[in-house]
Every structure is written in structure tokens, then in C-alpha cells.
Image: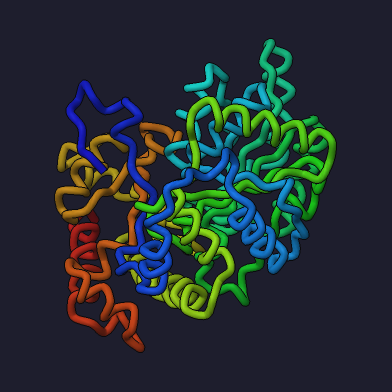
Length: 405
């Protein structure tokens, strides 16, 4: 993430990237990409047959039967979501906080984004009752909300909504006529998949929900952009897919041929790819849990991380200590903490949170080590928390926060 000058903080180009794994690219994926590098034919808009068929198999293993004609692919989730929202129309309801790139997408299309608070126990989905009231109020004031964008494994909060809460949010969306877009890019990064059940709105609202998956969440490096979206098997779903393909075509948003080959291979989850995803999720889960303990020991707050490569800390209880250091809002906290930890620490204002709330997203990737060798050692260690470089990074986090008490 680029740090910004005071007058340049707002532009989208300075937004924080998604937390990266910090791990070497799997050699098997490098071989697949290299073997496809000689292909000169571009992928068709929405992805070729092999990529879409692999996506169908991916969703089939997760209980969502899918046909290729109900799938589209694009060069990363932002391009694909922009096309989908552009094709659907209407204003968009979002949870607060939400991923840094969601709100700019809506505004870029000239639509209005309305943020709804999340419940106390998790992020990613709006509080169902707050959603009902907000939709009622927005429509009474002349707004046109038609889409609810949510996440079943969340950035920035690193939480997974309980099934009953997700169901209530989907029921609220259905009762208000909202179409649900579920960003499930992080579902394969759940730290304890046997303990935290991840459900999809497409299971609850099969005719009124689309599913978006960015493969950089768990399967591909961020530098190989590819994402897939699953549309409902309905006439309206077919029309929405067709209009989405129109936008992808008009903007030239196609997956690069070699990347499409690697994406199809990754979506089939061969042993090496699946093993890497599980190992990475375990590693980041262990480190995130240790970072969570450091945060709580210092008197700050954070929901226990359940997924992803990050956690979301509320340093509000340390406000007086931060004030002594000239920190009064999330923007100042981002700069102050980032300098002391030597890593990007985007403040809550980037995730549509309140500027005055002292919240910050901490990534676990920088805690794994400074070199590829150190990060790979963390991946293969029986207990990565015993490695000196991991322990040192966690101790630094703890000491910086303890100094604010």
C-alpha cells in the first residue's frame, strides 16, 4: 500500500491491496502457466469453456451444482464485480466495514452506496434489522437500492458469519427485493474449516444470488488476476450474465490466456494446490491467533480471526495513549502504526468505517518473515510460532501496543 500525502489520501489508486500470503508461488502452477505461455489466442469474454467447466467442478464440490452457461470469468474480482453491477443497475447496500475496493466500484458507476452496520458477532453481512430499516428509509428518500453485496468470509474483519445470521440477512434481502452478490473469495482461507461452517447465499436464495470468487484469495498469486462468478439458473440470471458479458467485452476485461490455463488447473484443486491452500490457511490462522492474543493483552479489541490473512483491531481503548503520540483518528493511526511496525496498516476509514474510530487492519503476511526463505520456513514448520523471526515480529506488535497502555 502506498502511503499518501495529506492532499492525496482519498484517490482509489492509493487504496490498500488485499492481504497477500507472502509465500512462494507453487512450482506446479508455474509449470502450468509456462506451458500455456505460447498460446496467442485470447480468451473469449467471460472465459473459455475449460475455465468455466473447472469453475463448475469447483462449486460442485461445495454443494452448488453449476453449468458452464451460468458462469463468467474476468481478470480479477474488481473487473468482474464492476461488470456485474453495471449490468444489474440500481444502488447497492453494503456492510460497514467492507473491503476497501467495494465502495469505489459502486461510485465509479454513478450509483449510490449505502452502508449498514454489521452485527456484534461478525463482519461481512449487515445486521438484518438494520438492513430492513435502512432499505425502507433509503426508498422513502428516493433511493433505488437493488443489490446487497456481502461476504461469507470477510475482509477486513476476518470473520465468518454464523449460518443463522447469514440466513436472516438473506431473508431480509429477499423480503426487500434485493439481489444478493456474495463475495466468497476468502472461503478457502478459513483457519479451522471443521469448526467454522461456511454457507453461501446461493444455497438459501438460489434464484436471487450470484457468487463471486477471486482466485487470489486462496488458489492463485495476486499477480495472476482471475475471478469467476456464478449466476442463478433462471431467465433473469441468464439476462444478467449476458449483460455482464457485454460490459466485459466493451471494456476488454478478459482473462489472459496463460493465466486462464493456470486458473482452470487451480480450480480443479489437484493435490499440490489443495495442500498448499490448507497449509497456508493453517499458518495464517496460527499467526493471526497469536497476533490476536497480543492485541487483547495490550487492552485493545478484535474479533477472533476465523479466515484470511489479517485481523481487524479496534484500538479505541488505547485512545489516550495514542493521543499522547498525536494520533486522533484512523487516518493518523494508519501512518503512526505503519511506521512502527514497518508494514502497511490501513485504517478503518479505508473500509468505510468511521474516521474517528481507531480501527486498523493488520496483515499476517509481514509476520511470517522478511525473505522468501523465512516465509517458506514458517509454512513448513510444525509450530511456526517457535521460529525466531516470527516470534520477533509478534513481540514487536505486542511491545508497540503495550507502550500505549
